[in-house]
Image 1 (cartoon, rainbow, N blue to C red):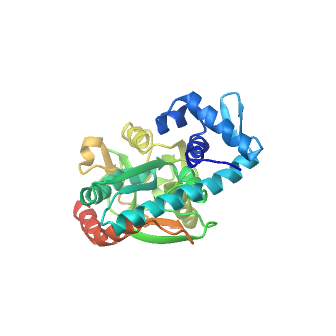
Image 2 (image 1 turned 180 degrees about the vertical axis):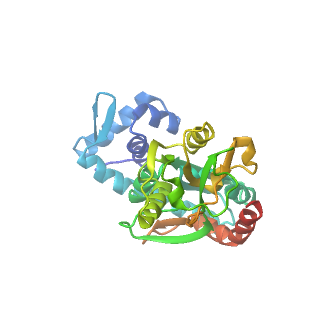
Image 3 (image 1 turned 45 degrees about the vertical axis):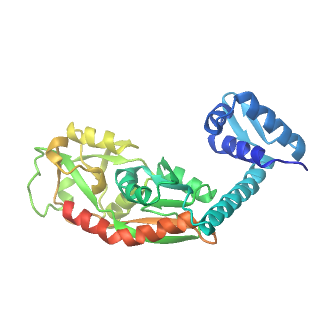
Length: 305
């Protein structure tokens, strides 16, 4: 079987993006080039690697098997290149980090310091909802992952590094604004706008409400923190949201945080990777950087509270 490394790279791009056009754009080649290379690759394997039904591209069983092996080979080669660069005293390469959408409010600040220290390292930040990040983790697509609610069915190495308080917000001028020690039962007549099911925020919220025997009246389920804040500011209901998504001046967003008993709900942001995965030198360096920076991050968070 004759297969080139470039063919594997192009195939992985198609496998991840589920589009030949998008893969060609990402790899800076023409679409006919990708199609030709994939045809040669399929001929070498002896089985179809993907099928297109309508506008949907799906991998065949042979394609799925090849994706697993190709990803391992490409990662192994990237790891080798980084180790050689380290021997030469160079710090360059690529770091891929999968993060849940809520983490985009603070992760770029963390990466800013890292990128300043290592300007030759390209950082790729893949921002998705929790289900998307879990899928990427399961497929071992990235070097590291940041989320607050890791899946229980995947063996991982997990390092908590920052608290993630979940607060209950209302529109500025809400009848309960400014009240202290509001009982959860007082919210029985309120409507709620919550994150979509499966998100880390929603999982924590549902667990807490269930433990308290409280059943919220859910008006909307949204996958965007921005949309939730706008809906709450518009008086459509209350919400539970990560404090990281709120600006320093709540009045600018026409929002207020309610002092409800049991809130904020406490959780933590963690950086993680599959157990057994050999981290690249760059990923290991980022973990060390994060450990060194964690205390400063916590102080910054407390100072902004």
